Length: 159
Image 1 (cartoon, rainbow, N blue to C red):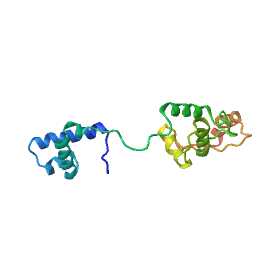
Image 2 (cartoon, rainbow, N blue to C red; image 1 turned 180 degrees about the horizontal axis):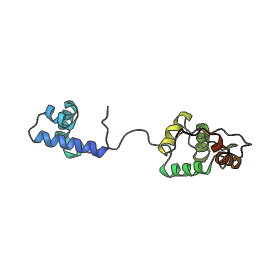
Image 3 (tube, one colour; image 1 turned 180 degrees about the vertical axis):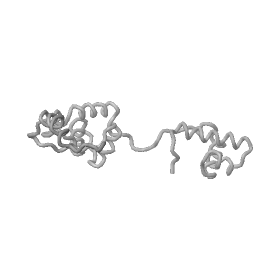
Image 4 (cartoon, rainbow, N blue to C red; image 1 turned 120 degrees about the vertical axis):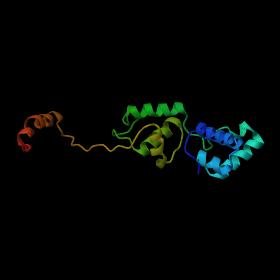
């Protein structure tokens, strides 16, 4: 399992291990000091012997490249902020299937609906549930009631 930390931090850990090895410490002691398994220290030592400093350098994280570019993600966020109705949906509620459909229409990229939550999370969005409110609701009357009527009927604390 990969250690936590940025690639630069992990690189610094490897260089520190080599410094300690060159300082005369054995692999077990070096492993304890840098917080890794001694097999990792031995692997780093062998790589350093074969490839020098270049063998300990941080490498780009492997994995599938993202389907949307950074610019497309910015455009997606702007479309999300404009709202679902501006994107042609009947109600003002974003759902994962709607976001998926928006991405397919705008960018021609297909995502599985289950991935939408992860994608939205990378953009800084979190799942929210709309509050259910009656269409007939009159906010001004409610605020007036809360300010005038409610104080007269609520229980007063004993003093």
